[in-house]
Image (cartoon, rainbow, N blue to C red; front, side, top):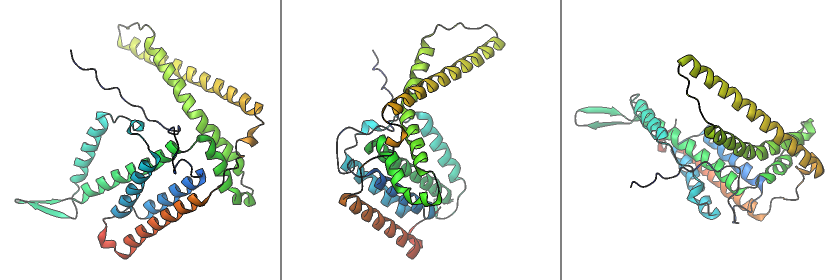
Length: 278
């Protein structure tokens, strides 16, 4: 008998990992500021040194937060095939630096650029995942409202935006679960195989319409239930109300990230030859 295939792991997002750690206890606004600072630095100077420093920060944070490997999704084989195809195509672009293999003069510039973009994408995804795995969804909206408080002087509806963000973040996992149930129920339905191509095409269109109608119905029902729950708990004002504020640990974390960003900028600006930019 052959061994059963390993079960694929789905992406775990918007659900904090159980337990506590110094990273879990940080204020949600601090994590948002850190992600914003790193995002700005990597946007302006996406060199190898900034990417490496941010990757080191991500690995240290994963160790401090005790994030298990099971939160990572299984990577489909198609993704690896696309990466290999993209790397091979980018390598054809050539460019500096050049290497000589026997009598062949190869340029690695295109391949290095592709690897740099891939590493940058993985680092940014890791940052977003860390915020999701160490932060309760209910803490995001109050943090956004607190950080955006100065914008109220410009008559910008910060609280309303924070409430909208909170409702979207809370509804997203529920809708994903509902859609999985819908797709599972669709697979269990008995299927009648049409004989002609025209009938098969008509059947696919009918199934898509049925799925869309069911998804809209589920979303409306969930929205109605969420509205009743918010009303019973005192209205939308309670969503952005939270006593959480930054503490000493948040200041230390911000200073460390600012120092890392300053080092990255110094390396990119003062020693531009040490890095290979996009």
